[in-house]
Structures are given as structure tokens and as C-alpha cells.
Image (cartoon, protein in one colour):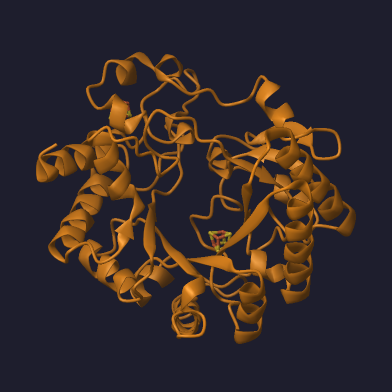
Length: 364
Ligand code: SF4
Ligand code: SF4
């Protein structure tokens, strides 16, 4: 959910503001009180309807900490109360760019036991290549110094237990080994690697030739992870291994054959599909549903609800020997005008390279 829907950074690969979607311009910056109240009703309704014992609310953005400590404190308090009254415990997580992670903010996050995921792309050169401050731009205007200062604070004995993960967007221009080492140096509980979003019509930089640049990059990181004794969980690699061994793993939305059930509640109460669809077209993530008129279950009945399973993939993926592990990759990455989503992933070469490499290394 988006308590706040703008950002204080202007990352050039941002899939919220820099791809095709423009709907954010029409939404309130901070979720207004009546929207928050209705959202809590919907959450309670969902808990009761399904007899849930536990729910997890992820604060996303933009930059969610721009909502301010008081709004986050108040919302988390009310959400916990609403969930408990409906019979469930509530857990919270936040995905932040880290620039506003002050001592005062961490105190509020402590109060509600909010797990913190921070975006970091590696060392200063790697990170600041893309993650600049809004309104500044240019060399030296990156956010690395602020983010690493925040990570030191998060890693201090008082706050360490809140540390959830690091999120790194892959850029083959960065050294894979130096990037992994820079991330692992913070001893995060987990690292997530994200491929920049794109489609066949607007492929990510470096995709489209015969080289699997992103796959090669991830293979090098995998080897570094292995040779250093897997000092940290890397969910992408763990997922590939689990899927290859068929032991039920499906830890990311990018791989495997299970549906990726991602719904976002926007700051005006709109219910939208996962934001990676912003790569497809303006408003491609829209469902037309809003918490004022729709329950969460109503989304399952919409014609635009993403389907999963072999039958929803193109013939190339259906006959691919890696399909049980790959699943055709992230849905948005399969899009191309003409065939819609009935294409292999724009990262097909890269996924093939990574899966085969891990299969060889793991002998599975
Ligand atoms: S910090 Fe996140 S939301 Fe903000 S501009 Fe960068 S990628 Fe986009
Ligand atoms: S995207 Fe490529 S590797 Fe993945 S299932 Fe489809 S054809 Fe196979």
C-alpha cells in the first residue's frame, strides 16, 4: 500500500515514474484519512472472510517514509487494532530508498516492529549511476552517502533487528563481484536482485543482442555467493535452486509457475495490479476497482486478473525444457505489441543462462 505516492529521488530506471505510467500524477501525495479508514475496513473484512490469523502490510511508494513519522505511527497503530479486532495479528514491512531513515523514524518503526527493506545498487559508483536526488542530477548528486549512513544506523545494535533486506537493481555496467561484496558488507538478512523492467517494445538497456549480459552478471554474482559460503540469503538464487529441485520453492514473483498475487492500494484507494506492468503501457496496471466500491476478493473476478499456469504462456515457453523453473519470467517482461503477453520473457536468454548455470553448479 502507498501511504505516500511521490519520491525524493529520481532514479532513471524507476518503474513508478520513469516508464509509461502517468496515473501517479492524479493521486494524492499522502493517503487521506478517509482512504486510510476505508482501507482498514477492507483489511478487516478480508481477515474475517478468510479466517486469517496473520496479515502482512507492506508500505511501498514512491518513498513511503515521506508520509512522515506521525502518519506511519498512526496508521500502523490503527491497522494493528483493526486486524486484531478481526482476529489476526499484523506484521509490517517498508521498502524505502533509505534517505529518510533517521533515528526518529526508526523509533517509530520499532514501535510497530516494521521490517525495513532498503534499495542499494552496490558501491558509490554503481549506486549513484542511477539513483540521483530529485532536482539535482549529475555526478556527485547521488544518494549513496545518505543511504549508507542510514544503513550504518539500521545495523547498529539498537536497530539491527528491523533490518529486512537489501534490494539491488541489476546493471551489467557495474562489477558483479564488487556489487555483491558492497551489499554483503552490510550483512543484510537477505538480498533481492531486480532486473530493470522492460518489454519487447521497449527492451531494457543491453537486451536484444545475442549476449545474455544480465544472465552473465547474475552468474558471476552466484559464483561469488557460493565461493564466499553464501553469507546472506539471495532469494533469486534460492528460488532457482528450490524450483530446480522441485521442493516447492517460489520465493519471487519473477520465476516459477505459481501466480504472483500482487495488488497495490494506491493513495486514493485505487486497487491496481503489480507496478511492473507500468512497463507495458500507461495505466496497464489499473483494475478499475477502488476500495470504496470493491473488496479485495472482487479483484479475482475482473477480466484483467492475471492468470497463471502453462496455458497462459506462448508456445516457445510451453515447450521450453526450463519452463518449470522459469515460468516465462515476470509477466510484464513478456509483453510485446502484436502478441500481447504471449511471448517469452525479454530476458529469455538471461534466464536461460542463469538457470543452466545454477543447475550445472548445483548438479540438479
Ligand atoms: S527510490 Fe524507488 S520510487 Fe523513488 S525514484 Fe528511485 S526507484 Fe523510483
Ligand atoms: S522465457 Fe525463455 S527460458 Fe523462460 S520458459 Fe520461456 S522460453 Fe524458457
